[in-house]
Amino acid sequence: MKTNRVVISSGTKCSREITGIQFLTDSSGGDFSIPLRYSRNDVKLVTLLFLMFFCICAHSQAFFGGLAVGGVTSQVDGDHNNGFHKVGFTGGAFVGLEFNDIFEAQFEIKYIQKGSRSSADDPDQFVIRLDYIELPLVASANLGFLNINGRKVDWISFEAGASVDVLAYTNQKNNGANGYGSNQWKRFCVNGILGVKFNLVGEKLQLDARVITSINSAYAGNYLQALRFGQWGAFNDVLELVLYYRF
Image (cartoon, rainbow, N blue to C red; front, side, top):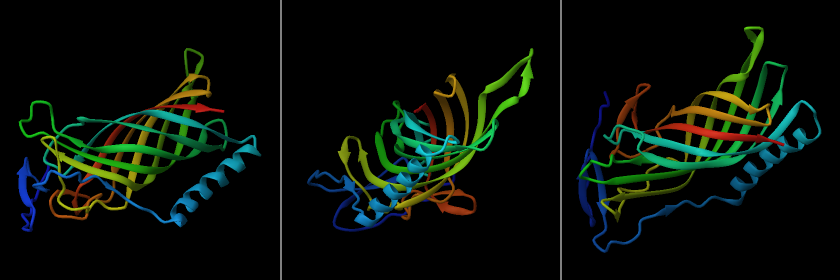
């Protein structure tokens, strides 16, 4: 059961509370999309890390790389609205290292659309859009050591890892009107990852199903509040289905 706290604030903008969420809405109906700006050093650092892994991949048979594309459904634990109602996109590139026939590790850089949406039958419609640059590091082990009827089960792998999200864009709407409490979504968020991967065409094309959940709160304000790991906040939960193509 989710525990939620709502703090009512005052100001020049009028406030509205919907299903446990308080939005501040400008009477002018202006657009409150909040794109975030980053320094050139941030972009250079992420690019350098990925290029470093990709260059290593190109010069070693033990390394591999490729592209990823897929879809997600998500919710925000703390918005007082249960259910993975919001659908989004994810895509990017990855590089990895094969340690042996069983174990491998993979580093990725992807764009992912998280957030929350009210259910279709909810009279108070709202949507929270949270787009991130996601940096996952995942270790996996296939079941090639198992034999069923004399055949290896090396086409299934289980994986676990963690990721760091860098917030790129956020927007909230209430009943079709743009609105926000304030831009208090945190710039960085750490997540845990569990998944299972299936080889569709050898290791060339793989289908990956993951559960991704926030370890720390993605929200610094007081409007959205749930209790997780002994801390109050708002937490992203994601179900992800992605196709991975290896070069």
